[in-house]
Structure formats: structure tokens, C-alpha cells
Length: 553
Image 1: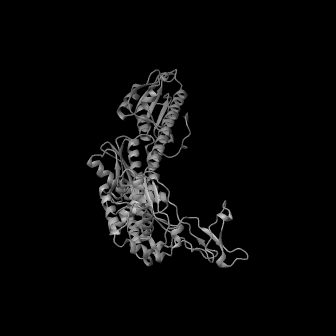
Image 2: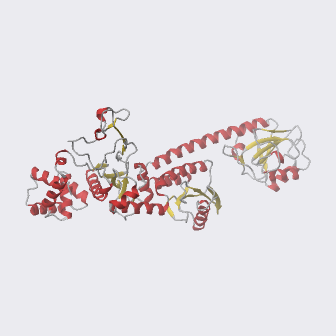
Image 3: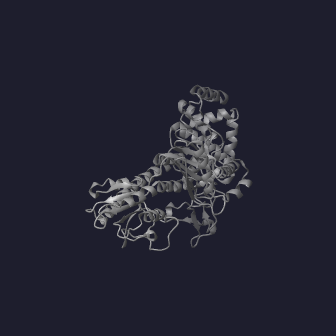
């Protein structure tokens, strides 16, 4: 008497709210009616309905066995009160009624047609030659096709969003792609409703206000806040999703229509945005990180060391977007995350480079004394895949003192490896050599010069090389004293111009690009340097000596 055409919940008490639908998109009633081989005809009720499943029942009251959204098929074996019967179907949330004519009824009862028209339930006439199982099979086939289309759409959207997340401005790019995929507005809001980034057509002011209020519902400022919420305002579908991280960021969506798969696509964007925004969750966190970087690059070593928790080596990186666009806190935070650090400063003002502080790498050398060695003779053991000759030794008596940027570990301790910056798509980077915590301010200036060099040479990354070779043989104190005496006639701008000009092999154009001045200005400054130093700057020996001196400052 009562046979479901697909598995569903067991019979029980009536439900006041329909449960979650099946993992397939709903099928518009019009698509089923378009299957001419079925011979179905709508004879009463509205034309629009969404079918979630098919159910066959000959009970006088099938209400307890309905979940909502069904196309109920019946031949009216026990139909005695059409008005009551239709009312119970509407209460249960049935989507439509398919009535089979013959052998019980020669035609669809007029009272049933009137009841369906009056109570707004679509009524289909099923011809005698169409079995109910054929209708059920057709519905499942339509669902399978719809599910396939939805999966293809979600897959394409996932690929597009992942590609956007790899751009140099990942947060705006993901929002733009999401707005394109959903055909609406996508915005990243703070818990207070401030719009950080947005893409797509802006909704009308009333809908925008409703979206902001909806975002506050999911903003995780208090325990028990939902992770998502939806609403409808004047025909605009509104959605809000809380991002992970606990800082109150919300993805807010406004679309004119809601399609199957939209929630899944939005969920993919939520995951990506949560990861991208993690280094700078909210304006407050971005400000704290920027303030910390500024303090570290300008404070005394005694103040810096406790904050960093490590003596180094540290690398200072200056970065600019290749397309020249300014970098906001979230975009800069994504750069920092890709480099492996949350210490990012992108709030120095328009036109300023992003500054990143990169700490020691995760794989330090292991120092251990071998049998027969003293503590002073201990050498680092080789890592897996490394020969003993490749393991970097510590200084032995009579050998050159190791680079102070790489503190020598005591026997049995680990020496931190400096992190090695690598090029990043869409960015131009300039990095200092690994430096101890006592020299961060100087490394900041070096990184700025490295960035200028990278932009002038159109290189994605320029890393300043530490002093080595013959220059390392001169005691640092004597080298610095000689440099001060030699360069004393030059002002700071002239010394910077000379340093940049020499680093670019005397190229007027590249030096002008690096310094952001006209090439004639470079010529004038270099000419002035030659006059003040009383030197021939075309002489290679002179250039070499000046370069050595400039490297000490």
C-alpha cells in the first residue's frame, strides 16, 4: 500500500519541519513534464515545484510517511475525501501529486482537481500506459544528470578559486572569482561590518544593510554564534559565513538567485579565505604585526631579543607587487604566509614597500662531539643525504672566525639554519643576508637597496651577499674606519647613489629606475661624487676600492 521509490526515514510521528534533503539537487517539475515519453499532464495547481524524491502510496492519509518535497504517486484506491487528502499532503510538504487513471478511476476526480487548485498543490494526470516505476526512474535519471552538472560546476569553481588564491593579491582575486561564479556580490567584512574587500555588483542599500546585519550574526564575537546564516531581502538571497581563526571575519554574499551547488562553492571560498587571512585576521591583528615589525627594525637589540625569542639569523625582506599596485594588509599577510612568517608590515603608507621579517629555518644543524674530539673540535654531523664533507664545520683554532650571523652552537646544541627566501609570483623581493638580531636596522637598509636593485634589473629576487672572499680578510674595525675616512666628503644621498650605480655596473638607466629619479640626475650626482672624492670613477681600481668601502657602511 505504501512503497517509497527510494530509501528514506522510517515511519514515525509527523515532523513540523522538513529534514535536510537528499545529496542531490532538486528537479524542477517542468523538466519532468518535458519528458514526452511519460505522457504526464499538469491539470491543476501551480506550474513551479521542486522535486526531491518520488513516493508511491495508496493510503487514505500518507502524511506520517512523507518527508517533504515528494512527488506522490497514487491511483486513489482509498480516496474518499479529496479536500482533506490534499490538505494533509500540503501540510506534509509534498511537492506535487501524480494521479494515475484506470483501473480505479476512469478520469481524475473533479473534486480532487478543485482541491489542488484551491490549496496550491500541482496535480499531474498519469496516463494508463505509464507505470509509476517508469516515472520514478525518470526522476532519478534527471537527478543523476543534475548531480553530474553540479559536480562539474563545483569542480570548475574549485579550480578557478584555487588559481585565484595563487595570485599575488589572493584575497581580492578569490572574492572576484567567487562573485563571478555565483553571479552576485562577495565581500569580506569585519565583525563590526567594515568592508575590507568586495567584488561584484553592489546590492541596493536596504539589502546591503540586511547583509551587514546578517554578518554580525555569524561573527564569532560571542560563544555559540552560528558558522553560517541565510536570509532573503526583496528578492536578493543573502548568505554569511564565519571564517576560521576567531577574529570575526565574515564572508558575505548577495545573489539574485540561488542555484544548486552555491553553498558548496561558497564553502570552498571560506576555506581558502580562512587560510589566506590567517596571518592578518582583522585590522587589529594586522596593526599589531606591523607595529611589531617596525619596533624590531628600529629598536635596540636588548628590546628586540625577548620579543623574537631567538638571536637569529634573521632575514629582512622588502617587497613590492610587480604590477605596481599597492598591497593591503591581507595581501601582504598572504605573502608573509607563503614565506613562512607572520611578521609583516604593510601599513607604512601608500607607495611604501612591504617589509617582512623572516626567522630561522626549521632544519638546524646538529652539533655533536665525536669520540676523541674535544668540545672545541666538535663538528656538525651530516644530515640525511649529506656527506661528512658537505656538513658545514665550526671554526677550529687558527681558522677564520665564523660568520656572526650564524651563531656557533655549543656541543650537542642545534645551530639554526637561516631561512632562504625564494621568488614569489607577482612580487619583486629584495632581501638582506642572514643577520643576527643585533644588526636588524642595518639589514633593513640593505633589504631596501636589494629591492631597488631587483626592480632595476627586473629580477624577481635580489639577495644581498654577506661579506666574503678577500674583503673578509680585513678586520672589520679597520675596514669600517677606512670606509668612513674615504667616504667622508659624500652626503648620504650621494653615497647611496654611488653604491647603487656601482652595484648596477655603472648603468645610468638602471640606476635611475632603482632610485626613482631621472637619468640626468644620476649623472650629476656621480659627477659630483668624482669631484668630492678627487677620483676617476672610470678607473676599475677606484671603483673596486669604493665598492669595498661602501660595503662597510
